[in-house]
Amino acid sequence: MSGRGMRGAAAVVGVAEQHYRRGEAPHGEKRMTLEAILAACADAGIDPRQIDGFVSYAGGSNDGAILGGALMIDELRWSNMMWGGGGGSVAAAITNAAAAIATGQAECVAVYRAMSQADTGRLGYAKYHYGSHFLAHGIGSPAQICAMRTQRMLEHGGVPREAMRSLVLAAYHHAQNNPTAQGYGRPLDVETYENSRLIAEPFHLFDCSRESDGAVALILVSAERARDLRQDPVYLLAGAQGAPGGFSELIDNDLGEQYMTAGFGPANNGKPGVAERLWTAAGLGPDDVDVVQVYENFSGPAVAALIDHGLCPPGEAAGEFMTVENLTAPSGKLPVNTSGGNLADSFVNGLNLAVEAVRQIRRTSPNQVVGAETSLFIGGPMAPLVSSVLFGNEDTL
Amino acid sequence: MTAIEPATEPWGPAPDGLDLPHWEGLVEGELRLQRCNACRAWIWGPQAICGSCHGFDIGWEKVEPAGTVYSWHRSWYPYMDEYAGRLPYVTVLVELPGADGRRVLGLLVDDIDEDPRIGDEVVGAIELDEGARWPLVRWCRVRAGSEGETR
Image 1 (cartoon, rainbow over the protein chains, first blue to last red):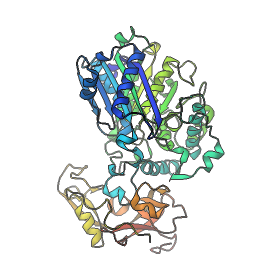
Image 2 (image 1 turned 30 degrees about the horizontal axis):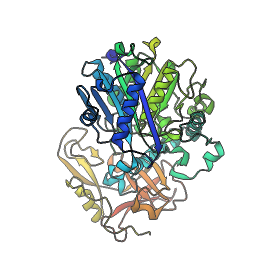
Image 3 (image 1 turned 120 degrees about the vertical axis):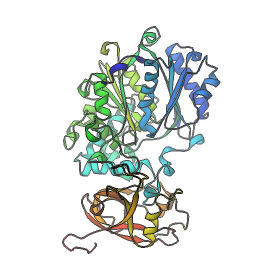
Image 4 (image 1 turned 45 degrees about the horizontal axis):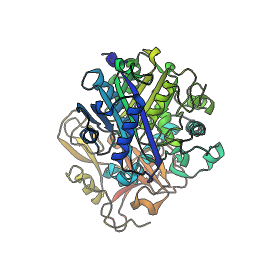
């Protein structure tokens, strides 16, 4: 099985996002979700009552029956929550929607996520997610878990810390062209980055993503239907999710050198792993990618994810490749996080990055990559389950 | 040593009793990890099944608390109230040759202003913080060239 049966079968036809400083959302998660879904339907030119599927991930209590009931949709056919991985399953949620459409289980699926500090607190303090054998030793947040894996990538794997810094500087560079980014009007230079306080060593302040209140929604339909809608279809070329058995699983005893990866690399016993399955299903490879949105709750996991996908060389060479010049639009070798990303735009559990991946194919990004035809979105590196999805325009089918 | 709030620590034996022998071992002065009675594979963190042979007959065996630093991290931010009084603190992930390379977490409690290095040899001692319910293994680096002596 090549997994290519879904290639181009579904497309993103509507997107919407709203974000606020954390704790400052004007409404709760349910209302913000409904607003985002309505806005995404308006973007697509679709009647919201035609939505028959809902997919989310990571958390939240508003399932498909609740939202479908509120919207009084015609019929609910698909209501899924991705299991495990937190933000790692963000791209998997999009693939799940496409799978429903490709197999005829649903025809119009909304992928959504909302976060309001007032409703569900903050992810950075999700300490009771971790078991006794972490908490007992002062490890109670994703930042610390990712810091330890990153430290091994730097010290044992030989990746220079400057690779992380370039990713951060590129994000802030892009945010200066995005008026809705939380880092807009706040450019970042090397000195400020280096002098910022340590948070979870090796992460300085600017290596850590912000958390926002907000909501994001994407609407997917079949490729055939997409061609009759308002926007240029953004086709899902491939999606893959998973992790090597035992990766992370909150036990820190994954196999071989998996500890310093982001979880997309080769799996156990010669199984290919998430990244290779993605490329196989797309019939494309890392050299074919025009622009990347990579989930960066922290800079280190994002660098590891680029390495896992073959987009950046491992070890010392990562430092030579990961320069601000290479990572910035309009014409860097591999522009990343072109709206500013989780670091400098907003963080609604990473689904905002998918919206930017779609904008690049529509040619409406605030930092448009010249001639972008393929657009990669990588979700939740170093989470227990990770995922990525590759989008393309009509010419890539 | 900075006191940890008494009897409020959110760690200790799991409600299902799976890892109770580990915590009992610490009280009795031993580091105990899981080991499959059938295929003899070491298992950590605690599991109900052996990932190597899928047997459920899993025992607990004493492991020498000595190994090497697999990775490390210094916390500067009070993510946990229980550890806020120790900031900054260093957590090490220690690879244990006595348990076929299984890795355990623990605080490094020697001169933590000096960065550890991956591969540093460390030895653990079981310590009970004032007011705490459960003892924990805490780690110190072994000074190069003077076996057994900690720096």
